[in-house]
Amino acid sequence: MTEPSNPDRKVTSLRELPQSIEPRHDLWPGIEARLGAIPAAADGATPAQRRAVRMRWLAAAAMVACVAIGVWVGRGLLPGTAGSGVLAVNTNPPQAVQPPVNAVPREVYVSDPRYQEQRAALVRELQARLAALPPPERDKVTASLQAIEKAKADLEQALGHDPSNALLQELLVNTYQDEMRVLTDVHEASDPGRGI
Amino acid sequence: MRNGSGLAGSVLMLLGATAAYAAAFDRQVPAQPRGVVEISNFSGNIEVSGWDRSEVSVHAELGGGIEGVEVSSESGHTSIKARQPGHGEARLQVKIPKDSELNVSAVSADVSTSGVLGVQRLSTISGKITTEIAAADVELKAVSGSVQVKGHGQPARLRASTVSGDVHLEHTGGDIEAGTVNGALIASLDAARSVHARTTSGGVRLEGTLARGATLEASSISGSLTVRTAADGGFAYEVSSFSGNISDCFNASPEHTQYGPGSRLNGTRGDGAGHVRLRTMSGNVELCDRR
Image (cartoon, rainbow over all chains, first blue to last red; front, side, top):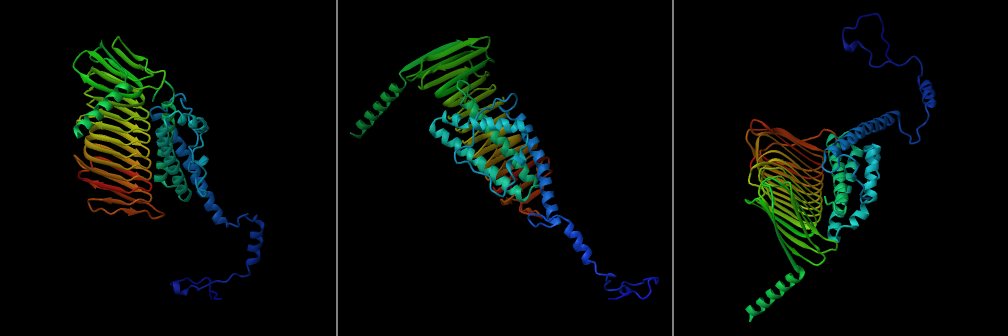
């Protein structure tokens, strides 16, 4: 332990400073007592880790708002999807691709209840609408819907690792818009006497 | 002997065709040169061509299950509809004044148009749309069918979309918006002003020329993007891909993002008057400023 010989003396060079300074007493018991006062995290994460996780979820939440707004704005601009919910078509297509386990939950991205309601209505009727199409066309459209589901799952998985990635967010919004366009087109296409 | 067999085969095919379309229908009605013509058919096909006369001519071949064709014309509005209580097919050949506005709706029928100079709105569910466009607005929608457009380089506003079919646009200019989910999207551009192309898993290939100051945007999730376009005044470009490769023909090197995957390529060609923006998640991107 190196103590400065004369604390009032002016320092003229870094070399004159002590290499290390020991505390006047052992600080560890106090630190240990304070650590003991903090509730232990169930997963054993350190405060820094918990802060990082919290920041990721905050970023995800901010992104959700952007995506939800984007989806609604996009729906308003897309042909055939605007206005009074025409929509009442489909459900998950057969063998739909499920989001990966480590992806951020889908509800996080699109939290607007109106969007969810309308999409759910379209999805509920999808099978019936698909059944109205000739079998070869039904298979093609089902394959397209599966491609969209896979795209969404891939994007959500990537966003799970990089929630603030603007490129992925933009592509996800595009994909949600495309999904609504397809669901709406299928709905209107199989509406007898109406066509698309 | 071989010729005899061929002749017999042709006769059989003709008989088969005659049997499939047992009845014919013909009618002409007066129409305004710039009126509106609406045509609908459930199954079969619809062929529309523009002509110089102020009348609409309908020729139909009707299969079993088709009751007939309703044709009405009033106050510049002509309506043609195949009455179809069953599942029969009707083949409609319709001639309309070339400057008419045309609306066609079909379910399981191919739609083709030629020589129509007015606005066109064509939709079919499982058929193919083939159209020749001029300078007027055109909107084309299919679900499982493909969309093919032949332009003449005239600026028009074109919107073409399908769910699972391909989109082919030939010599199209003006403002173009096209999309498909898993089909291919291929376009040749003639001095296009704005281009918006989007697919989910299908590839996109855009070639041709852009007008000065034009905007071209294309994106795909897993499909590839290939853009080879020359623009008067050049263009600024922004290319981004999360995990796809980016390449170009002018020796620029994509920059990799500092944190995590992803690469981008930004820069300017010529004076940078136009703007090219390309985005993919996993699809490869190729950009070239030459056709």
